[in-house]
Image 1 (cartoon, rainbow over the protein chains, first blue to last red):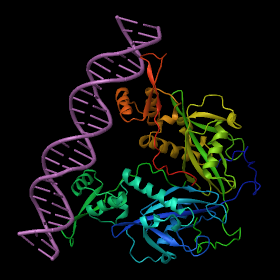
Image 2 (image 1 turned 120 degrees about the horizontal axis):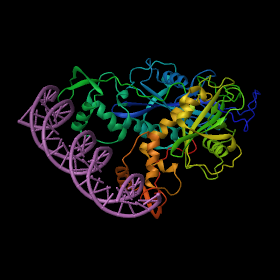
Image 3 (image 1 turned 180 degrees about the vertical axis):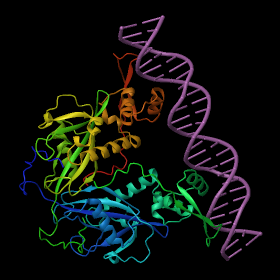
Image 4 (image 1 turned 90 degrees about the vertical axis):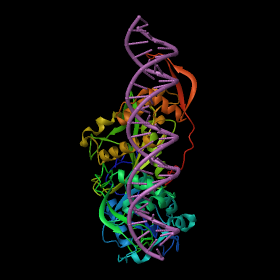
Length: 240
Length: 240
DNA sequence: ACAATAGTGTCTCTCAGACAGTATCGT
DNA sequence: ACGATACTGTCTGAGAGACACTATTGT
């Protein structure tokens, strides 16, 4: 922690240093009906009563930050399995970000596969999916500094898709190449050439073909793939 | 901040939520004598007495996180001008990272130009430059979780150099292309072809030629350049 | 038959790196 | 003259995107 002794005598007087509340807030992204959406909750009390907010809560006294984020994510989304991807975004601690008291929040971003299955968790009923564009359309819609946090999280998830094969986390176990292409198209707001996308994604050995096909669409049935096991190179996370 | 009311009644009872100490720690990188180095301080008291640590200190009750980092950076390095680059790395808050109490630290990384000019600041005398390899060679050399923080910061600064024209921040106002090449070579531990590097860097319009040349080297004098003004696109920082 | 989607193959253009060659210094 | 460094120019191979073409379905 590095208490510079000159700045603060690092004695054991419990009042020798300023006290803060520490929370975690999570931007949970998913794709529902071919649209990028984020999980929000509606605030019941002041301040920002009635506004939308990112799910989150206090870090417990002996709880790791990552663990707090994982716990809140499970509570809010009601997912049984752990989230496919959960990563720290950064700390937000402007002195006036909460009018009641000094709160530093550690923001996280997460990707979950389409979760329209009935969500059971404790608070899941209070949460809902909102298109990211809608959530960001008016800054006052979001409580606290959550507009900025969500904006930053969106930038980060977009950039992460450019450098890591994370797009499959938006999809269930088995998926078609066009579903994967749609993930990139939604996140980057572009149209990708289906043929080239198919060529590249196969070349990169990121997918393993299952023998199965998805019928029922309009055209030729598409083969189902699963994400190949990736040797996670130097994940810079883990109990920080 | 999102106090999930169900998790914690967000009343105004000041003891209704856990209290944490919040600090900032900074990995300040520079290149001295063609070597990548980091600013460290030696701990005077327990715990980790005698070990090296990243400079840092407590965030003041009404101080923004970025401001706290900038203040500590100025105090430790004794730089008069603001650091060329200071950016948040992330929060580290394992419950046992400080044996005395629960401390969450917001880590930052910074780039400063060669600062072998006499440093005047208050605590600057206590700080010193250490080659990054040396600092990381034995995990116990660094106090707390600073080994992990420095490792993460090193990854981040390396990656940032790959995506943004940040290398010039290691250099003073005017520099030669070979000096800039050395920045990349030190950070990535590679040898770059001088001719190709020259071609690319000129093509990218990141440098502006001054008419001047640096003599005294062994070969043909090298022209001095300065960094071109860059339109900082969507810096996702700023008072978070 | 036809529209729609899946998947394959080909071409071209760009760009990064290999490398040869020229320019200009200090010794 | 010679070695060293700065700078310029040329070539080539890999990869990204444009696009044409084939394959297989539902209607």
